[in-house]
Image (cartoon, rainbow, N blue to C red; front, side):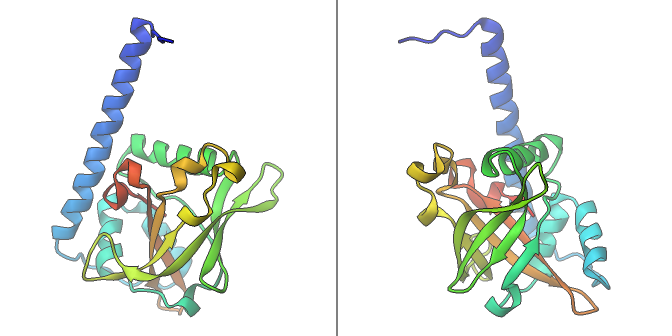
Length: 214
């Protein structure tokens, strides 16, 4: 069967595809440029709340600089337990909205993603808030410390989802998350608190060079 789109829809589809391609290319270029930029000055915040505000005001390039130069690799003991999560700006309105759509609509199946829980045996799971404000758990992952895909001379805490993404249990969207990988590092505060900073990506969308920050 041949599906013919009206000219207007074809033009819209081409425009959307071109816009996303250009925006993805900008993301990948900013990641590449962050590797070659000199480490910026970073004053360690007093509290986790202050650090979160600072991260929410950072550009993608600035937060990548922090990820590469100011963070450290968390130990397994550092990250065990529940962590609240937020999405950060992703190099402009278009890619930020794409990140919101993928995370809060498709990945979350209509719920709102609100963080991760790291359990024992190097396994964790994502947390979601429903419309009735209850917490649900979905999308299990394995985690361990590995060489960073972004910088080969550094380590990161790497989260992999492929083992748990099966069409029979998760539906067709499971295909989207099979190549999903998160890299996580840790930023310390003066008062002893800390914040995890991470980059999540899928192989089909360009990998870590086009990752979104959280």
